[in-house]
Length: 212
Image (tube, rainbow, N blue to C red):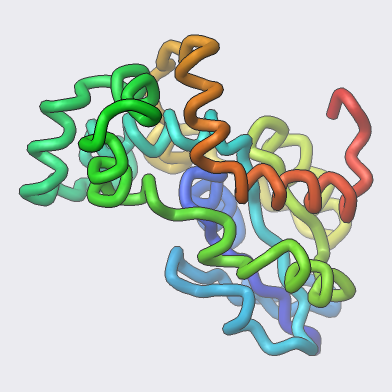
């Protein structure tokens, strides 16, 4: 029996994926292991198979900001830390924090102390070069922007009838939020430049069509 690991990178649809698969212990030739946020690719045995979800870094930043503003609701209830309480008052919106990134000495501090904003693909996957060395056991990459379609394809490939939850709590789905302005989005993209290097690697490995 082969082991298939799911790496849960925050705010990429992982809560919904875990809940869709948690009633399955195995499928076909694979036995499932569903990990939390702390597991890294380097923790996975090189002989095992694995998959994970991704999201555009700018959209992921906005989602993570408002997730902390809501204290994790609707799926979780994680109170603010004392530092978060301060920074979320100083920067009351994702737009405000993003616009301040190039000019305010407070913005980098907020980015480091608001939970999850400092989480990058590097922390889980190490580097694009290391990712490529493990690509022979990479089953798929689920795009948050196309999660239902990508997950349906994965379920069909595994021969199971798993379906993503449709309720807000089960999928940790947030209320709609306004997109960042062009300037703010550009600032965030620059901040997460290393994550965009990973995105290019994902596109190369998965041969996603354009537009996806």
